[in-house]
Amino acid sequence: MLAIFKRELKAYFTSPLGYVFLAIFYAFSGVFFWIFSLEMGTTDLSTAFLLMFIVLMVFVPLLTMRLLSEDKKQKTDQLTLTAPISLFSIVMGKFLAAYAIFAAGVAVMPVYGFVMSSFAKVSWLPIWGNTLGLLLLGGIFVSGGLFISALTENQMIAAIGSFFINLMVLLLDTLIGMVPSGIVKTILGSISVYSRYAEITNGIFSLSSVIFFLSVTFIFLFLTVRVLEKKRWA
Amino acid sequence: MIEVKNLTKRYGSKTAVDNVSFSAEDGEILGFLGPNGAGKSTTMNILTGYLSSTEGQALINGVDILEDPVKAKKFIGYLPEQPPLYLDMTVMEYLKFVYSLKKCKLPIKSHLGEICELVKITEVKNRVIKNLSKGYKQRVGLAQALVGNPPVLILDEPTVGLDPKQIIEIRSLIKKLGKNHTVILSSHILPEVQAVCDRIVIINRGKLVANDTSDKLVQNLSGDHKLIVRAEGNPAEIRKLLSTIPNMQDVRINRENVEPGVSEFYLNAKEGNDIRREVSKRLASRNYPLLMMKSSELTLEEIFLKITTGDIYGNIDDEEKKSKRK
Image (cartoon, rainbow over the protein chains, first blue to last red):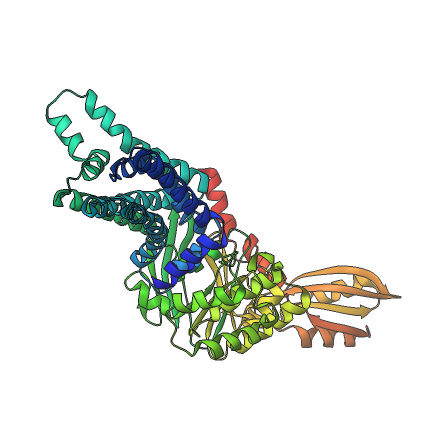
């Protein structure tokens, strides 16, 4: 697992991918911070956090698109899949590498808090809560992208596919608004990633949300292992 | 030690490997031979745990590759048809990655240094793999298989893309490795298999058609009952004379006047009959000087063609006809 993690992490910086992702992350979060906190004269970062959902929805697929698809295309999966390691550790190694880059992006959010703390009194609890929320959201985006990447040999298809899934996650909330109240609405409401994330940015940090985010991440990782396993069986 | 028992692999309705069984002892180099698309790579991918078999079993040192893949894979070094290289890494970075991927315990620096020396990539070890020539890429692929010094080496066409000098080097390297490794080597280049391997397994369209030492394969399929003879004298008369030999099936004049007055004959007796003495005696009795006699030994190349086109065993041809009738 460690070998794959290190290799993938390094690969992000031998190609422009890692730099591009981090640059986009820092640029967008910086702009949001400037517009919605500095210009508005508030120490509340929650709008910036909420808008990062849209940004990450579009750009996390960049991070995950080549993780497994490129292996398939270049046949390097013949090395990893015939090495004496479990499929789960291959998947975890890849996931953690992409997640580490993601976390390096998220690490900038508390920095904005520190910037503000030199001008005014900052309430830190929501900022840490939101940061944790963003990290949890990242788990879903990264593992979802990894899963799509396992399904195809083509990076572009992997990127577009995972973007599409992320878009569906966002649009689910619009759909919920149109469904009349009843059992369907309740079910859809309870699987909505966006509303749970919005809840966190509003300062409601519930254990059920944490478990929800972690479970969805785990399900995607599990499915990715199954896809690799299926390749052996098909 | 590798044991393959009744291995079958189906892709939907297409059977890629059909009930293949063979085994390779410790310290044996097994040549895996077949035309393109015969199922060589599929079999090797099953042996290394990259694919699963539909039916049957593959045991590596007694460990079933499906039951305990992690343990079985520890014994194997695998060079696939296309070397699995990460093009964005340097050779040394890549080998170090493979080293930690295989959880190798040998001293890293000396071990990787030795391998680089062995496959002669020391001078390119700090270059990015993307920029290497095909021959070097192939050798890095081979180096990757050797990392961790696994007792079983599975090499899928290891000399593809190399120049003649490198081919000879790699062949002698494989021979050297064969002394303390079990090696399975696939190829469609016959002289290569003949030069390197102790034993040859030929598969065609997923079916095992021959499994023997290369000497025996040659012997079994030719032998003393087929001769090429040159004698001086009237060809028609000599033909008549030789035809009277007991158990003779067929005498053909291959070429007249190979040398002035000398003709070449192709003799085919019933299998298991040594006719050499009789040929010599009869020619001498009529005063036809015998100038040459050799058994028409088939080269491996001819055997291969005969087997894979069904000339000798005939079974493939029959099956084809059957399936056409359907």
